[in-house]
Length: 214
Image (cartoon, rainbow, N blue to C red; front, side, top):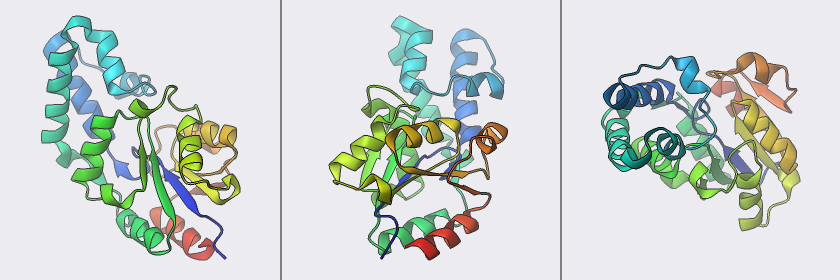
């Protein structure tokens, strides 16, 4: 009998190495419209609200023009991002075992769909919940609860997989188990101090875990 009926994945730093693309895209619009460059650390500090919300706060009446430019650059330069080696095979393994898969990300819906489709994994997910689809972004558990409710899942048989403190907080509040993956975590030390149910340093470790539990 399998231990998990559903698994929820974050995107950035969990499924995909997208940070370089995100940093470059933000700097593209801040340099062009504000004549300002941002450090990676400054951009990381913005994580939480969607890209659209951040751009709206920064650019006001010009937001539609900037927003179009942002997503054009994000799409055209998506070769900067990639899925972590072995992750696509892991997702296929879970689908073959009839595990329901969900995305719960702070990314806005447009960036989320661009990335999932560009990397060829969009069709593997039964539900995609982005920062645009919730009233409160992570660490709110809202996106986890939407998955539980849609498929009438027992929270004891659902696992959240993410790389950030917000993923841990969301999972704890929702009452599901959490696996922290730290192969590319921007908050490694904080995550390691938070006592997740499981911690994985490589995709292979995560795959071995699922092979035993499902």
